[in-house]
Length: 231
Length: 409
Image 1: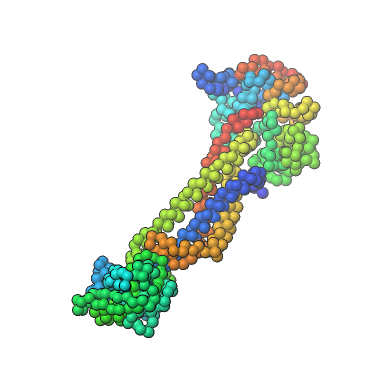
Image 2: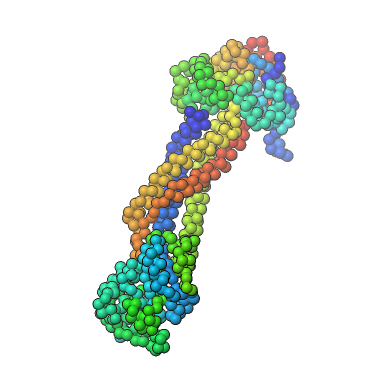
């Protein structure tokens, strides 16, 4: 099976000379379709940097990121934007909804960029919001929703455009344990039902318990990996 | 509704105070420009009218060379033919003739050098504001015409003369080459709010002046006004050629009063400088407001870039926000500017006795509205706002998602 994302000898440095910090060093990874992968490691180990590079949000200093077998470095800015729009969903730690758009509009945003017809957009948005338990709250602005509800909208937004992979940076970090658990169950269910690929960066043991694959990272290096048949 | 338009509209409505301040800044810039233009235009028109219609006239005809030394032996050639042309010319509103020479005026208190102007009382009143400027006594009339003289307020003070007092005027008679002296009684005292006029001119009846100067029926100057005063500045008119005959020269106020023409020209520079300063302040204000808005939303831009928004879309979004602010501001600014101009025009600005470079404003100044204030000026403010939006828009479009999202992903 062809990997959705592949990194080869990936390196990212900050600073220079004596103050040079290797945030990532020679990371080789392949994320295959349908995985529910957790990248785990202590704070400052390079998890977020790795996700940024995998999603094309930053440029590596060394090595290559291949998105669906195409090197990011070979893509123009516009191609990369379009690639992210069409193939990658992002879930951020701090919900990160567009505050002036309603829950439905936030979900609709990417599909608008994709040029999907209005009727289809509306149907998909309402179905997705119902799936994440937000039926009846479609027209609420982010500040009219709880933290857990906002993160559900963020998940819905990431998934509604049917990307090949969802990159999530500590998605449960700002949620209470029950809300975090519910959200995790929901994402796990979507992964099982729709075969959508998830990659998390996390410290959360509950995510680690459910992950089909654990990638351990420390000081910018992959130090180990575990695979399970079922997370 | 278009996505960019919708986002821009909601973002503008998001921080109402900042939006209101930005709109206020842009609209006040336009309002000030409209008012300044209306004020400068009115000032320029009033100065021209004051300088020309107070006494000299919109244009004058002299024999070539006369104005170099005001040589009284260089009278206007063929005056009757010229007066006939003026009488029938469609552009000409009124005209008069004058003699002029330097002489002495004496009272019991003082002797002073003045310019003695011989005028036809009736036609002079059609061209200049001499008759309206009388503040004591009366204007020239047919009664006792040979002893009538008008003097200015400053001259009256120096001569310690009042209406009815006797004055002696001495002029050189060019026929006899003798000094001609006549006794006059002050008929009226005029005030034109100009030191030169109020101190240096006296007016007597034309036939008497011609007699004292020994000129026969000769005159030194034909002064005339156009139907529209603005025509006097148009050097391309055929009338200049038509009247510059028989070694005479017809000239408008721009040639007759080059210092005034330069000063009026300075108004354009003043407007340019005022506009420039307003533009710089407004540009900085708009750039600042746009950047504040962008910095507040850096994280958001990081998010929307991360989820696949093209940089060009971000650029368009910021430019659209600038455009919306601009359009609202232009409407408000035009309304404020119009109200300000109309209100001040209604109240009027009276500069009283103040003079500007020797030109006393003979009228109350009332700012004017004109179409350029609602076309050129708003367009300039529009360009300014869009220009001020470009840099913040480029900045926003160049945000690196990874840096913007530093707090999270």
